[in-house]
Image (tube, rainbow, N blue to C red; front, side):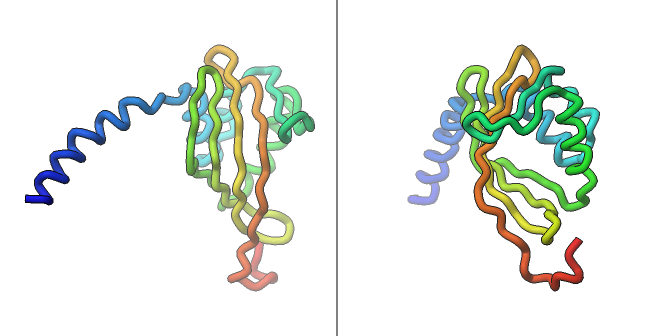
Length: 147
């Protein structure tokens, strides 16, 4: 009996809970898919020509599509590169993602937690602010085996 009541409650409550979660702008979803596919052209199509990247709050990382393209061209060469959204807030033209990134650094592969704050201009992303967390190197593999 309790299982039936719980199932009925969840069946009713879950659609209500997910109905109130705002859908992120399409450009944010597309850029994540392109990032994980290492598709530079599809990734860049999500950003304005005058895109600006910052380390929060105001340290410039890259300005303009050409600078961003060079930065991500090298990044997309990493075969293990992948980002997963752990949490997301959508507020108007801003999307705030908590991301878990797997990538390779010169000292080895590992993971990185970061916050990305995307600001939309129309249908594309015009600014991104990053708050970088600590990186964690994968120490399970010997240094000689690390890329």
